[in-house]
Image 1 (cartoon, rainbow, N blue to C red):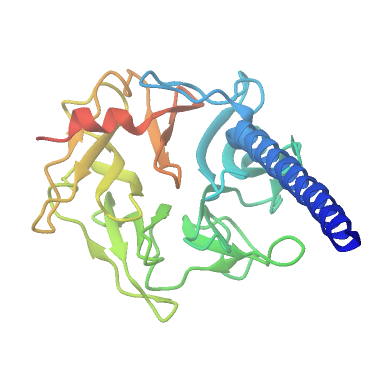
Image 2: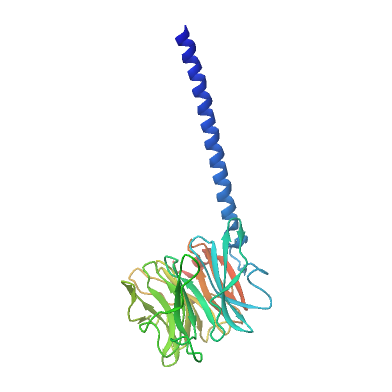
Length: 312
């Protein structure tokens, strides 16, 4: 009889412990789920995501009435945001980060008195921040033509600026950078006949190779620049000035064909383009949102709109 009572008591204690474990596990899962929900709600500066109608991004926080914002990029997690701003003191790059449940106040990176910095873009692994600047190679003297530079992420802050090298930069202007998953850099340059075209440079063992100019499905005798390449190279978006354009500069899109060529680029139309200047395209790493600059503010819209430009 004692053995039976002992066994029954043991089962009771085991049941209590099991219930406690389940309760503790449930509490942990609920807390984790709550934290995840909070983090998701704070992504993209806590802004309500757009649908198929473009809207200004973070008005009053990022896009301000008395400033010209452009060249924006989020990290892959949507928890860091870099963007260019044109001020009375020149072009600067600002940065804000999600810290806990709050976004930090925007700070200026790489303050330079004599040389502006703009068009920020992160490397595929997020450890380098690329940008353009008119600073000379030795960092002293008068402003130079635009070159592509980068800084490397350190334990605290960033490294000193490093020039992307002679395979990328020339005596003319190079600017606006984006990358494929394998590290191929797409950018624009006016090294040929002072006309801006779009180029691609593969990265092999950490070294950028001689750039290749894109086909005439993208480049024309007119201006083409400010290029965003999809990480899987399935599409490309860029700014161009063409006769059929709606304004001073329009955004165009082209898709990669089955044979590896680019489809003829098409104007993104009045949904995106205006009589003003549309530029600085960027698509978030999750592929959900398309950012660009229009009328000196940053806009965003769902990438669902891309379907209307692709021929079936």
